[in-house]
Every structure is written in C-alpha cells, then in structure tokens.
Image (cartoon, rainbow, N blue to C red):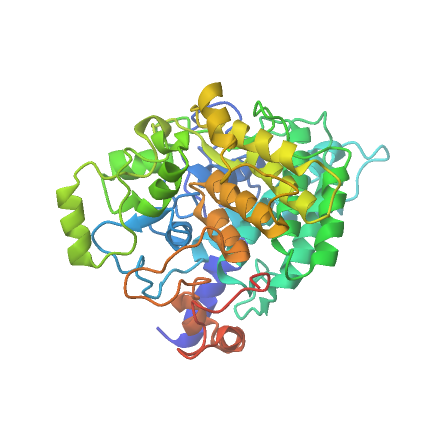
Length: 507
C-alpha cells in the first residue's frame, strides 16, 4: 500500500471522529441505545457514545484499567505490581510495540463526537425562548451537562496517555489531520486542567444525563471527580512546576463542589461490571480467556508481609508473590515449583461483576496528606494519612480495628511529625500512595517515577527501570516527520525515543 494511503488510513482510524462502532446489547438501565450504531448514522446516539467511553474502563478491551497486555499492563509491570510468568520479555524491558490508536479511535473518538455535536448544536439558531435545539432536540441545560461530562472523561483519557508516553498528539488530534504534531506534556497538563475547571462550571447538579453508568446521573460526583483529577495532576507536577502546582491544588481543593472525600465511598469513581458482555477485565483474563501470563510480584508481597499489612490477603490469589523480571527459564521453573503463585487480585475481587476503581477517597486523602507536608495546605497531614489508609483497608474488606491499630502505629508506618524528617514522612506517604493505586498500573508507575518510592530494583541483570513507553510503530511509520521531532526529545545512549527518557514532570 502506498505510504500516502497509509497516512490517510492513520488519520481516519486514529485522529478523526468517524470510526464506526459495533452495536451491542443493552444490559442495564442508562446504557443508552446500544443496538443502534451510534457513530454510523447522521444522528449518533450521544448517550450510547458516553456509555461506550465509560465501559471501556472495565471491559475486555484495550482501554481497560487492566488491558491484558496493553500499555496499562506494561505500566503495571514497570511499577512492579505485576510480572510475567513465562514470556518475560517486557518485565525485562524489551521495547514495547504498543500503538495508542485504539484509545484515540475508541473512547476519545466517542467523546469528541459528543463534544462536536453539542458545540454544533450550540451554534444552531433556536426559538426565542432558547429552550430546545433545532439539531439534537436537547435543551440547553442537558447539553451543557453532557458536554461537561464528555470533557472530563476526555481529559482523563488524555491524562493516562501523556503520563505513559510524554508528548502526544493533542491539540491537532481528533480533527481529521493525517500528520499531527506532538504537544509538550506541560502544555497538555495545563490545558487539561483548564478544561477540567471549565467543565465543572458546565455541570448542572439537577440535570441527569442518560448513559452515565459511572455516577448514574449524579453530576455533583462528576464535579468532585474533575476537581480530584486536578488535585492529582497538580501534585504530579510538584517537582516540575511547584508554584503552579500549589496554586492548582489549592483551587481544586477549595472548589465549592469539593473533591472525592467521603470515607464510606459514596463519592468514589468506581465503574460497574454488569456481567455478560460487560465482564470485569481481570475476570475475563483469568476465567474466560484463561491466560496466566501475569502475576502479583514478590516486590508487593514482601512489602506487605514486612509490615503485617492485611491487604496481602486480597491483593493476590495467594501470598506467594512471583519474583520480578525473571529470565524465561527461571520463571517457568518458579511457576512449576509454586503452583499457587499469586494471580492478580484475590478471586473475590475479580468476579464477573466485580467493579473497577477509577479514583477513590483514600487515594485523594493521601495526596492531600502529601500536599500538607509540602506546605501547600494547612490541613492535618497525619489525620488525612490515617483516614486514608483506614478507608483503603475498608475498601479492600480487610479492616479489623485491632489489626489496623497495630499496623498504623508501627514506627515504619506511623507519621511521627517532629521526629521523622520531612523526607522520611513524604516517603511513608509515597509508599502508601503506591499501594493505594494498586492495581492501576498507570497511576502506580507515575507515582513511583515521581517519588522513587518504593525503592525498586531492576529486573535481574538489568541496570535500570524504564521511565516511559516508547512510541508505537504507527507513529514512526505513518507520522514520520513529527515523530522524529518528538523522539529526539527522549534520546539517550541507546538512541532516540528511549524508554529511559523522562517525561516532563519526572525529575
């Protein structure tokens, strides 16, 4: 196929809003009309597009939190949450060949279609009362809230991509251009934060949106999610741009809508798994696909065992962590000698209908504890720290008061402000943040890069751990000029586009 045709195809499949969606069965209320083709008609069903973008976070797709070998799984291996059990190339840092096309052509395409349709709708002349659009038939309050939700979710997906690769197509993406430039990560971060602030203002608390399977039409929870995302993004830039980071953090924390905070979990962003076609991604991998290529690492189980952490009962199917990054022959021997090696998550947490965590209160409280220690806020770091870990134990169903009190009061765990140095206190929080994000490898890998906690050893025989994923082959082959420009930004002794290059906030 001629190269210019390849580039046109690249444009259509990745960077436009024209991908067809395969219709599928409606499985529960608010899933929208999935029996129709939401992108394949002149009037796409916007509620179905929203549902599509949400279901991808917890389904057997390449966009799921655990994507069964995709970029999120690789992130989890670099964070040493997971390791490979027989084909161990990527746990030993072989260069990946993962394209991010599916994210652009899937959820980002769906969300951009919603945004484009509403923006077009807002430009249509309406009747004198301005009540109903002449295009989609949606009233202005509904359009505004749907637009806000779509923008928040789009920001979430772009956030995951840029934290994984660094500079990515952003400002020119999803606009039908075949050759798109790569925006710098700092500019993406600042624009995403600006978008999130704007999106919060568009949401009407009393306007329930169809297709919202995350919060079931509760727009206040969407506002809290957007503010929480800003808070985490601000803290992630704590070394790259601490002045702006502090300001953004405080603005998000002080927003009148609040952040995800309720320790009982009522505000948590947790995506459901109704079962059937929409199975929990871990269940699908272990029980349906019946693969056993990924295990919970000995890195994790050793840390949990060393402090008597009750989460060891649920992070894996057993307490037998798999040594990280073994050579294939050694991995096979270990697996054969330890048949009960720990699969990712205890079986009760990867049932067909088990939900998947996006962002929750314990993760946000730990971020606030760190910000307090940094002097960004005047909140009580120790109170937030203890509340967060308690909430996390409760979320995992392992909380017993006596066990928790024994755990939290250990010198290695307890925040002894005035005795420990500030760095020692920050390291304790960083470890708990790394554990709190498990099994979300993208978040865990980002936090490890930013803090260096826990102190991870490279795979046996390797000298260092990757800091990012390399671009996929489609970038080099089909967007060559722009790829070469950005790849040189991540150059080291091994050449351009190095997996050991650092993204903007990784200092």
